[in-house]
Image (cartoon, rainbow, N blue to C red; front, side, top):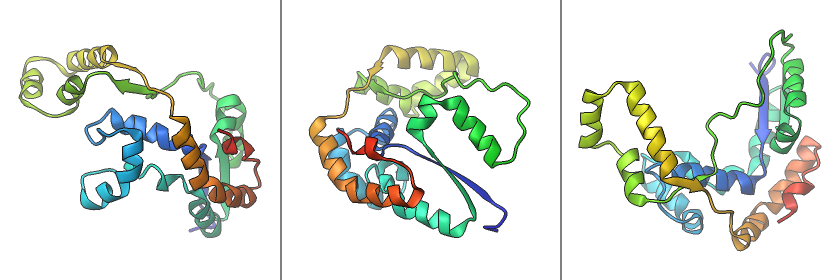
Length: 201
């Protein structure tokens, strides 16, 4: 199997990835703690609650070295993309992926369109609970309104009651960098890519 399968891995600065995952989870019912609290409690919460997504293991999922090493040892063709490079030179990275997959692309790809944009936080716990959880009101609206109208109303309310997420606290950033530092050095050698940007706070 490893002879025939091509693996594409995109790696993001693990600190940014952790906070991005937290920001996303915070817009759902599964995360209601501060980022600092969530980092401390995630493992215990995940082990006790089967309904929680592995996404809440914010720190652990940023330890890339072993995961990437396992892929490289199990599969012959592994292509690694750095998220920073993908953002800076999206068209080039997309072209490299097509080349890696040996696909001849004859269509224009819109690389400017952003889907499922993050970086938002709730301003109202009440509205978050109302809009994110199932309840009597939602059941009534499902009977009264077509799906398109419900989605439009929901998106409008979410837009009204969310705002740009706060930046990650510098002290937390430093703690996470200390946590990831060894793993980043090992990964850098493994994939032969410069990850010095990840080491800056």
